[in-house]
Image 1 (cartoon, rainbow, N blue to C red):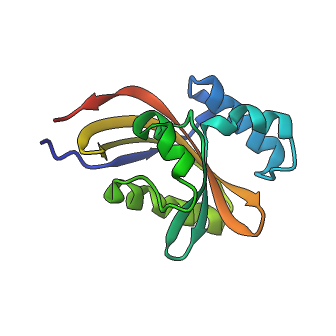
Image 2: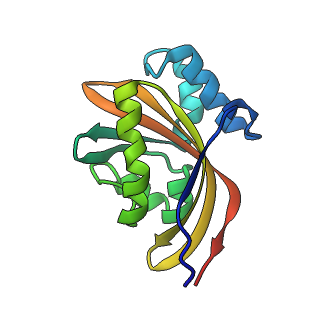
Length: 160
């Protein structure tokens, strides 16, 4: 198998990502600042594509995983239904690397936008994935939480 390292590149102009859902998420965050009670109709339109994570000093746990999220595309809708309370996707190395940004976003209360390319293990099958990712702080009950919208930039490539 090829050993491909994860690459994360900051997007200087996330609004230039050519994806309608990505754009709607940016617009929702710009008007709501992550407060779920604001712009609820817009939130409902993007919620199936989002992941929500409670963030603590020792990592994060799923609060919600949208069935139409990248995770749903890779691991299936059953995984999304059962994700609440889990620490992340089954590929722990992949999850730990991305998880570091969740902590930064909750502490700084500043969203980040990236283009990510990485290998991922999906139930024993290795893929190379490339996606745009927007990680933003959300006001969700008492949790320090982040919302994550990821959209494939390219179709996953089978590695093995």
